[in-house]
Image (tube, rainbow, N blue to C red; front, side):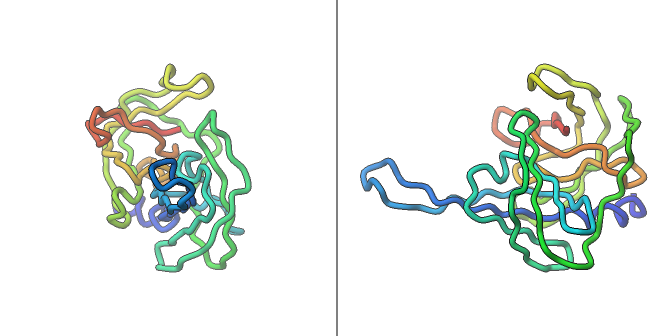
Length: 188
């Protein structure tokens, strides 16, 4: 899998979003900072990044760490809560872009890899198979790729790639009673 990951992994970024919330508890009107963790995928040379809407929803500031260690500030330029996708923009040079195909040819049984930043451990890669393609019922709008590749908190917005390292989906959700991976994850 090394050749495929060498093409795709450098384009997957860590995303940290921060929002300021007003506490509704005993000490009302006390602002507190809430941080969210996720992943994203660099789609273009001029700095457009695809991630999940829920990773950056209500964010007051968004920071992206690229795999060469650079920290960049990002702005939301578009989002779609129905598909749980958001587009960010960073200003930087020498960005790695994920390999893409116009029409991914994804089938049940295909080996796939999930790339992301689970639990803020840094970039990790997990491998599994497509256990169902075109999964409906999770949303009123989209079909999902179901996989048993380990997807955990922080992987949201990361890449699901095929064995050529081409992007076939954005990791968006897990099904698990504890909030952790139990072998069922979804990508859009």
